[in-house]
Image (cartoon, rainbow, N blue to C red):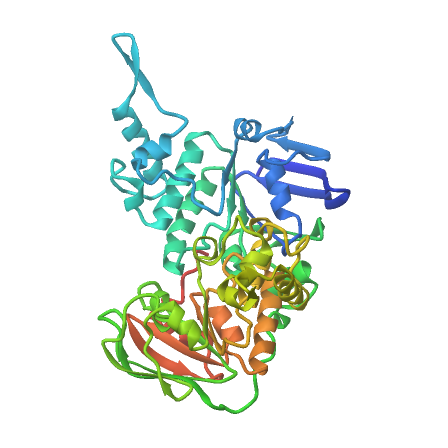
Length: 505
């Protein structure tokens, strides 16, 4: 049995008198990868912030290598051997790989009594640490030249240089493809076998079962279950997280026959990377579009919305009329809404409040005599706060203080105006916990039943399979197949050109 490297006992934390953690226990062994799961508001982020010195605990004890530690700030946490890799990359893109990796631990030498960075030693250590994790690269090139998984591995190596005994990874694969994730998982396995304890937070159950040996589930600020990945299953874990079985995650699909055509592509080519496109989307359905990196998945929705490039050939029909995507403004006028995958950088104005973010796509609807009608804005926002169960203090709360799931609900709700007939959504639940995912799926199904047409572009094949009425697969810039509900998920993956056997175990 491995030695216990971390023990958190009876951890309690309250905000404004409300307990967000109540007598929580967490144990981590040397050389173990532990999945920490829970829905939005379950308390996992608060627990990790206590361990990494961002929050102070109200009560409880923390032991690292059997010694009690008192973590009052992030410096205490780092000195105790805790390394935090947040969801957002913490790199300096203009610096070299070696400089990023050795930041905070730069080796020095003295020349004529003056201290300089020992470049040769820095390069040597950086290269050795990366080779230990299976990454053989030129450490003298700028880190921005690396792929996303390579940058993540540099972050891990940096923590190892800093003598981290415990590594916290928060949604490390949120922006990675399956193939890229596999590269990261291989480095994590080497890190684990070196004796480091890893706390792994992810919304993707498959990968948690692939890389973790145990799973701890929190619900409503309390321990809700502990599972060995070799002897438990998705249903048990989801039941602990949600109180529901896995089959309830996705709503029942539409049983109505195909109705009027909403969108039709006839031999459309946008470029050499997106060509010979023939497909139809029907009013009131969810069409799921699946593909891998480079398949065109990242581009097609944007092309329909007029963000980049025009059609080179072919015809597009929108509700039976000719449609040429020229700009987002034109797409909006034609009844098309668009929600980007990168919500934080492209979809929201984080320093404005919820009301501002909700009304900005159709701000003209709220202007009377050149002034914005704040009362009308609040009525619109409060309606969708109630309908979508957006958890917030009020419509005036700053948007950045909402959770990822509630931000995404707001991003969907703001397009639900009479002017929008087709809603394009990229990666609808990226960075969203399972509880919020379920609510979003149910709301999208309800809206489609009311006549809205939804096109989802997702690299999560299980999401596409669980939610959509029909499925379209992109591979290397063109459509390989369109399927109805009789298809199996393995067929979707095969049509996309993906190797299904990607598990480490």
